[in-house]
Length: 86
Image 1: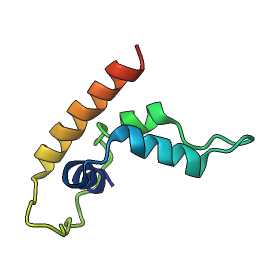
Image 2: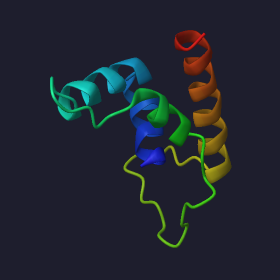
Image 3: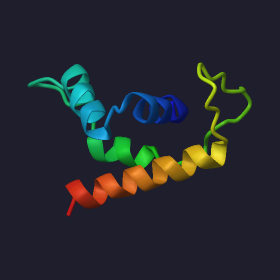
Image 4: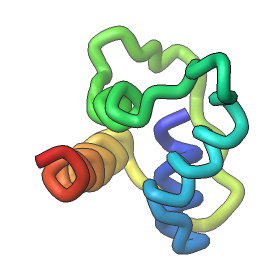
């Protein structure tokens, strides 16, 4: 999932804010709150239990390395947390 989010944000100028807003609409209701934006943001920079058994197939010529994905998502998630959770 992280790599898909990375490519969407990078190639289509989709922001984390817009992803969070859409996910909140899709997964939360008046009675049920399944999506938590803080947990989502934290998950973007957590890789301890990620399995790398499957190779990622990219749809574009741009094929970032795993470390580039991690670094990008770490920077974006920390930036979002600082901006929205003071």
